[in-house]
Amino acid sequence: MSFHYTSAVDLADGIATGEYSAREVTTAFLDRIAETDGELNAFLLVDTAGALATADAIDAARADGEALGPLAGVPVAVKDVLATRGLTTTCGSRMLEDWVPTYDATVTARLREAGAVIVGKTNMDEFAMGSSTENSAFGPTRNPWDTQRIPGGSSGGSAVAVAARQTPLSLGTDTGGSIRQPAAMCGVVGVKPTYGGVSRYGLVALASSLDQVGPFATTVTDAALLHSVIGGHDPRDSTSIDAAVPPVLRAARHADIRGVRVGVVKQLTGDGFQPAVRGLFQQALDALAAAGAEIVEVDCPHFEYALAAYYLILPSECSSNLAKFDSVRYGLRVGDDGSRSVEQVMSMTREAGFGPEVKRRIMLGTYALSSGYYDAYYGQAQKVRTLIARDFADAFHDADVLATPTAPTTAFPLGEKVDDPLSMYLQDIATIPANLAGVPAMSVPIGQDESGLPVGLQFMAPAMKDERLYNAGAALEALIGWESRP
Amino acid sequence: MPALSRDDVAHLARLARMELTDDELDHYAEQLDVILGAVRRVSEVAANDVEPMSHPVAISNVFRADVQSPGLSQQDALAAAPAVEDHRFRVPRILDEE
Image (cartoon, rainbow over all chains, first blue to last red; front, side, top):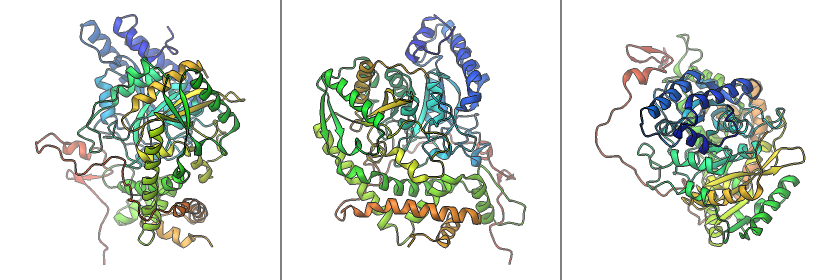
């Protein structure tokens, strides 16, 4: 039986009621991965034996009448930046090519507790730096809508795995748009929860004041199901918010857009966005208005500086976080022939282990933090960040959610921007503000451009009001009625 | 005038402990200069009296209860080490020989 177009919610129900077994479902998705991943390269590791063992354990538990978790038997893929005990976790880098964690990230542990079947680890831009998944040390992932094009990034593998129905659900991470932008480019739903809403214990950090873990799915309700499993306080993450997970599943199931004030961010709709993206965005707003939403324009004057502030804050934090790859306790070690000093070995290792984008950002951060430049660069960027957070606060006086196109373009050809960093960075122009302020955001598919490539709309909501994204997202999904089938 | 010379990039690479090749130095000097030119826009914002924001969540020190709990075993902690000797991390020499 084919399960590829069955939602995660229905798969969980079908397994719980015994309509089909976890093994049947898991086998179907593993077969799909085997058939398609030679071309797509969404997976860096497929854990066939582990997945089947988990599925069998779920089937046995059900036969014994045990209570099953909310994701029992449902396949999930995990971005390779999240620690999985016993499964290699490379971060898309030669530096960690052979690293097998001895512990689980909290989100991994929560997947296991919920009964999810972890099918494998997904490809990504090295250490989550990039917007195309071309910065992976293990080859690019291809977009299933057009395999000559990029899938977005950095969570490109997780986006493609769901878009190509290699798995119904996956986890990604989002530091400046790394879930939402690939979701838009692959025609799936992707959510960056509120900063602090999902534990980062066991996430290999890129920029600690920005990183967040979140779900990919083909429907808003499926994303809510996964969000509700991974969310919530974790004493192992000191930045984790000590509050209940927002009621995302209820919001997705009982969506009602009537009376919701949707704020269109003036600064993020004009030039720089591809005409087809703008056209579909406007159609989506019209559909929301016709269904009873109130469309208002909001002014966020400092969003114009978000990209500049981000590319000072992110490299600064990244250069500091990646200093731990020093060839001493884990990861690659190069040149240790007994004659060289620890510092020489360290320098040779980091030269050999990091790819170009990682090196660029480490040097940028080293520069922005160096004495004499700190106030003008990093310090000033942090002040701009405050002003961006204030813009959000003002906007949320007039609007319940904000809306923008998720990305300025649809998927571009492989190789087009890979050695043009600034043009690559512009991909995240609309997604970065939410990370800077820590507010939650979602990308929902709203159709295809003239070449058949998917376009996404981004909703943003105030911190810990993630349910508003799911309400608006599910309403829009029903209004658009577009089904993602590459 | 470029904000960043090739020598500056070599200095940054040394600070960051990355032994870049000559080709890389040329290439990155050019690219980093372009990126710095773009991010320098933050200086256009009048923000003298604005508090810097380091983090989206207002938190101060977060402590757990002072209760013993299991940590990584020595074996697990060493499992991924590039080199191990006598149940410890073995590192290249840390002092000059002179």
